[in-house]
Image (tube, rainbow, N blue to C red; front, top):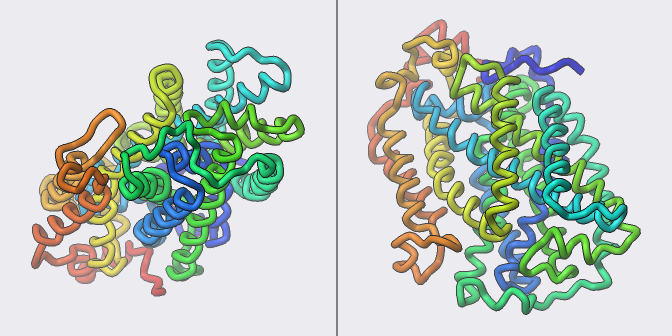
Length: 483
């Protein structure tokens, strides 16, 4: 299979051969991995019981999917990735906000996937062949996972899609075996080793779990969904079918692995750590399937994240090729894996990461969706590529390539979100006004969205109002299919 040559340029219609089923496959297959499974461990580690943990994950996932899924329709219309598409709202240079947010999201999740997958691999190999759990072992395993991940990411979308189709079936079977393997020791009681509710009370802790474990999953895809839907043709597939496929792929792809993580956390009594107890509680016959899940699943998920990082860096540095950008971010992600392994606990690192990125990413997603609704899904695909061509002008040029109201609105939302966040090692000033409850997600999205609406009150939507009078722009529109 040839290496993908496309970066963040517009995908020609003849190359847009994927469909809604491919979207479900890639969202399901790539998420059936330990990097997603481990998020199901967070609620039990916060001191919640089984039903409270399950409800927090389900509620958070459904709410997050409702917000995130419509973003998939934007790249269906623009034939490029979401950060580039956001130039319609932020300006062709201002869309760098989305590129940086996407880069940070994918970087963190790539490092987390390799970290957790590598730890489980070392533990399983220790029981199977006596591999010592020392620095050399971890370094070799992390390096092998990173190398395999880079190979898939560099070859691009088609290879990752084929890999996801296999993983959707294979990982489902491995997780089903895992339910049988861990079922004898399962309990629904809160784990006493967790030390009670992390935030001192049920509802603050439940809300923290809802955001950190449930909501964070869909939010991780706010800049990723377009990487896949840009290869779907709106001339052959309606927006409704693509939206339904996105809902199905996100809900199944997130709930199945996360609830497996919750189930195994109680079965393995994994209150303070997940990887070690998971391996220790595994029956001998499941060690090989567990090793396969840790390796293959991690490569599939991290490969997609790394692929997205390469696109985002390519968008930031147009002179860099997608392959070169991918190699660069792979090195950075691998360094983050070692930092996480040696300098932080898994619970603190995961909780801090997802809360911070959710606070920063949510207002960007809200503003981008408001813009999508305002222009009724009509974009000038050619004008979105001005920055990538190192040119100037176009209907999304605004002021020197930046839409100041949108950028200021995002900055306000992100700042309020950071002030409202409650981390294991830091708490902003606003949680004291909400009884210690972390409302960073709600406040950042609300402030960013309201500020954008107020600052752009009365402004026309450039893609709808101006492109309609420009013959060349109308010819460039690739996205006129109706629902």
